[in-house]
Image (cartoon, rainbow, N blue to C red):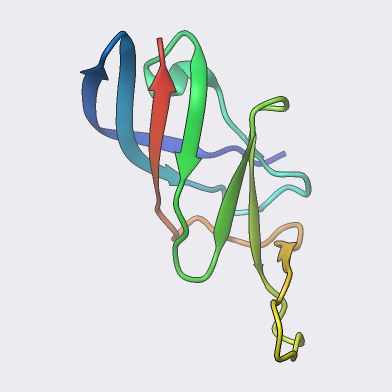
Length: 107
């Protein structure tokens, strides 16, 4: 199972919440169902929201119930004039070179 590395670049407070900025780096072998994370890596005890932003055509999606970040991308064989659905990245894909900016909110 893959897990993300967390690099914190800034910490601040907004109201009664901590706000953490930084980047997530996926593992060298993406795990189907998402890359796991540990809340404490964000310098928080409780994570109320994790917003991860797209990079290089990859679109991350937080799964707070399972504490994972799913990464989706466009299938290269999809050809349509409408909206193209994004599929989860294939297992064992090396995404480690991508640094996904994030904003984490909690306590």
